[in-house]
Amino acid sequence: MAAGIYKVALRAGINIPRQLSIVGYDDSPLASRLWPSLTSVRRHTRDTGRTAAAMLIQPDGQAALPIASVRPHLIVRDSCQPPED
Image 1 (spheres, rainbow, N blue to C red):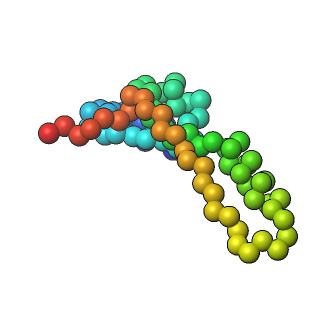
Image 2 (image 1 turned 45 degrees about the vertical axis):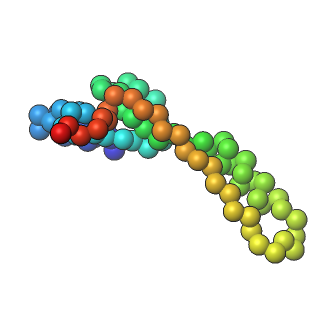
């Protein structure tokens, strides 16, 4: 989706990141190949899978399901910056 936004911005003469900041999700290999390189949120799918599996293997009769979270990681690249004053 972010690549499509890049394309539309380019056609409209919008400068990334000076006029428009873009942040993607999933940190695909394309993110580092775009120009300017795309800031992206990286999910930790392996850690998420391990956490989910551990929760499923809990012993029977447990009073409540545990609460767990796996924090994503922001990979800052060149596609975003603070707004200009």
